[in-house]
Image (cartoon, rainbow, N blue to C red; front, top):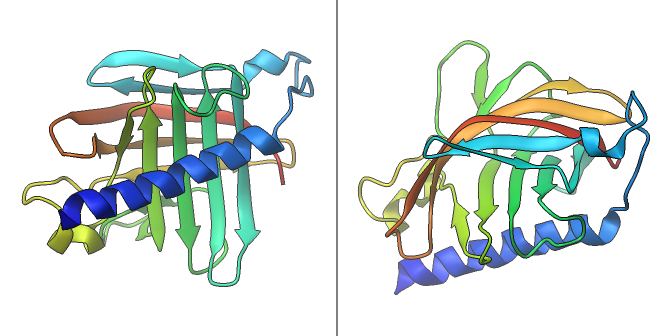
Length: 191
C-alpha cells in the first residue's frame, strides 16, 4: 500500500509539471533553419524507436528556493500533455552545468555527479505513467528496482537545449519495466 501511494504521488507531480509545459508553450518557428518542427525528443523503449516532435520545450538553470532546475519535455501532439509525453526533470544543489552526466544514484565516475532530483517520466498513448526511481526510495520500492537514470546537457543556448538521457522506468505496480536508451533531446528553451 505504501508503495502505490508514493508512486501515485510522484506520478501526479510529474503530470503537473508536464501540464505546466503545455500551458506555458506555444508553437514556434524560431529554429535555426526556420522550421518549428525541428525540435524533438527521441528515444528507444525496449529497443523500439519513438520520436516526439509535436512540441518539445525545456528550461535550464531556473533558480528555485532550494535548488536549480532544468526540465525537458517532448509531446507527440502539441498541447496534449496527458499522453505520448516524455519528460526529464533535473534539480541540482548548484547551477546546472553542461557536459556533466547527472544521475539519480551515487557515483564516483569522473564527469558525473548525483543530482538532487532526477526523474524520467513517460506517458504512453493511453496516458499510463512510467517513471524512474532514485536510490533514496529504496526502502519504499520493491527489491531489484533499478535506479539508473542519467541526463547530460550538451548545449544550453539562449534559444534551445540539447542533450541525452537514459534509464529504467516502471509503471505504478512495477509489473512493466521500460529500458530507455539512446535518449536525446533538442528542445526550444522557454526561460
